[in-house]
Structures are given as structure tokens and as C-alpha cells.
Length: 563
Image (cartoon, one colour):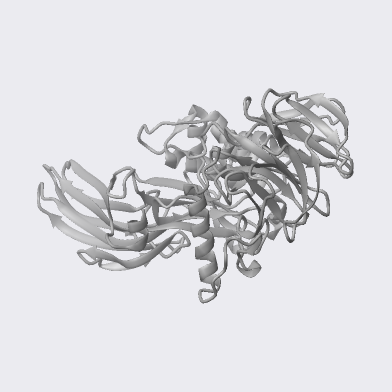
């Protein structure tokens, strides 16, 4: 039996209350209404809740739309209800074909229902409730069900698969790995599958025509998503814990969303020491200056100690603080520090492949700057050309060209921090590399295929907010027509499950302060990011250089108090 009030319920109601307060802070809105307008459509982003309906039963599972009504299955009532999608009123009801009704689907004239006790899939007359066809599920633990216009799709929790099955006898036509481990509801939309996951409390957009790759994911509106359906405009989700059905935004003008802000102080220290016996006569230190970005706000700073001699910009328009030092005493430690207080947020891009423009739509400036060759890329190397041909094939959609390259790399490389930054063809050939080397390979293949790409570098929160970063991190961005620059981390995408892989594409957590954006071979930073240094010496010298980022949470800020 479910608890009357759960932690998830409180989280959801608090989330609703914050949205309502932002929209109309002076107008109290009762949460007990059957239908609640939660978000102004003008302010909506994918996954935002537009309305929610109370369910007639306390254990909603499967969900489907017949063109007029929402059909919802109830686990304990063993009943299928047809609801008015505007008011939530139960217009009619029929008995479920089994004792554990799960997934529901509508094929244009009949309902389909998965029964979890007998593991059977049944076709029902929606007017009489009579079962007109029934067959055994081809998988041992079926849950979600949907109709794609000619065939059924089934989600199974024991085998962690999504299956396309024949509506005649359940024969499996196609199958691939589910996004994550606990798949629940399914909905067909515009050639894609929406798939809910109970454990992750997320809803994944899956591309069946591309081997089940996950395109993006949305936060589920409650703590136990079970049924999904699409009404031609919006996605609907039935939540087992909240006893509610939520109407969600899918496509909107908002293509990016920032969440989970937190405020921290960063002290980046660059240290130089010469152990001799020769002399270092001149030292130039370059430190990349972070900027305001969708994922970060600079609340104070950056401030430097000592002050830089100048702030310059490289050919990628990256601001760089330049320090000149002369006649450094033997073995004396010289430090340059950059301090900044920043609000970091997680950013999620909502990129729908069918809305991505063509390569011909690329801005000329982007084409000229981010399709050119550089020393680390070697675009004309036969190893790069061969890899691009194998990965991209005849694909012409820039999004899927990028995804095919991403898959090609993760299937042939593994992470190894061995020191040194080799050129892309060599890294691809040996099959391992650091985050920087993964990035060089990915950028080289994208550019060789005609997709503009660049890199970003950052200082990383390692574990706790009070932490130290001595390794840093670099990843890629690709330019997609219609969307602009989108984060892609080829090394971070080296994961097992499709849902995990998707978190490396269009997603940035709130653990990174980006300092550097560029195409490589900067006149000040070279192929480095965050910092670089160059010196002139007389006689043999043994030089020690290191950079360390120290993170500290800012006490008293609202988000840190809530955390």
C-alpha cells in the first residue's frame, strides 16, 4: 500500500508551488483541483508541466489516447478508464483483460493492454470491453506498450529491452537495449519512442531508426512514471505515486534549460619554479579568463594577483591575462592567482534531430573558422578520412553525422591518462587517450565530415564542493544549424547504457567552470587550456610548473543552504 504523503509528493508540490508563485505570486491556487494550469505556454520548455489531472483510481499504470479521450489503466481496480483530457472526468470504463493491467496502446480502432500476471497482450473493443485477440508476450516482464501506425512496441524490465512486435502474434521484429534499467511507459511520436524509466525518474526520447540511440531526456513530473502517450501536440505521463496524469511540453521555442545553480569560490594558482643550474631570464604566463555563459555567472572577479600586464584576445576571441616576469631567482617559487566567485548551473539542450538544419545553412563565419585543419587534427590523414567514411556513410543530417562519429569513437577507444597529447590519427589508431585526445579525434572527424567543432576547457569540481582539481577537463562543442553550439563530451560518453551515453550530448552538469573556448593552436595558449607558460633560459634548467584549482562553497547562499 502506498503512503498517503510521500517525499516525492512534497517535492512535486513544492515544485508546482514555486512555478505558480513565479507566475502569479499574489493569487493563491488550490492544488487539489482536478485540472491545474502549471506553466504559461509562453514560458514553457520541453518537459514543463502544462496541466495535471487526478486519476479515478489510486494505482494508475498504462496510458493511451484514442483521439478524443485519455485511457488509463488502474492496477488495483483492474479497470480501464476513458477520461476527458480537459476535466479528468471518467466518461466510461471497461474491465481490464487481466488482473495486473500495465501498458496501454490505441491502434486507431481498438485498445491493446499488457497483463502482468499472465504476461499476455490483448486487443479489446473499447465499447464492449470484449477481448478480440490475445497472445503471449514475447518477453518475460512486459510493461510499456505503444502503437507506431502498423506495429506494437513493448518495453520489458527483465531483459531491459524495447521490442517492435507483430500485432498478429507478438513475433519480435526488432529489439534494442532500453535507455536505462527500469523501463515503464512507451509513447510513439514523430518517428521516435518516448520511454519512461522508474529508477531514473526520467523520460527518454529514443530513435528506433538509429539503433535505439537516446536523443535526449526530460525530468519526469513525479516520482513514479508509469504510462505515456501523445495526443498530437503534447506528451502525457501517468504517475503511480502522485495518482495523477501530467500534460508535458515537447517542442517549444526554448531549446535550453538551466537548473541546479550553486555558488562557489575558485582559486586557481599557477606556480613556476626553476631548479637550475641555469637561469630563466624571461617568463610569460597566460591564464584564460572565464566569461559569462548559460552555465555560469561571474558574481565577482576574476581578480588576479599580481595584476596582469595586459588582457589580450586570441584568434578565437578568447580573453587571456598575460604576465611578464624577468630574471627569476634560482629555486624561488613564483605564483600567479586568479580568484572568482561564480554561480554554476546544469544546462540541458533540447535538440530534436528532425529540426536540425542542413550543412548548407551554416553561417559563413562558423564555416570559415571551425572547419579548417590544425596540427592536432590532420584532416587529410588517411586514417581520419577512413574513419569518417565508416562512421558517417551516406548520412546528411548534421545531428546524426555527429552522433555516428560519437558512436564510432566510443566503440573503438577507451580512456587512459598516459601523458602527452598526440595527433588525432595516432590517437584513433592506438585506441586510447585522455579527454583532450578524445576531443582532438572527435573534432577532427567532425570537421572532416563538414560539421563545425571546437573545444572548451574547464576547472572541475571533484566530488565535494570543497575540493581540488589538478587534472581539469576538456570536451567538444558542435555547431548544429538551427541550434548553435551544443556540448558534446566524447570521452564522457564512453558508457554502457543508451541513457548514460545521451548524458554526454547536449548536457553539462554544474561541476564545471569553463575558462577556455577555441579551435586550437592559440597564439597565447597553444594547445593548452586554462593556462600556458613560456620561458627563455641561459644554460641547462630544470623547470617545475603546476596549476591547481581550489573550490570552496559560499556559506549563506540560498542554494547551498537548501543543499
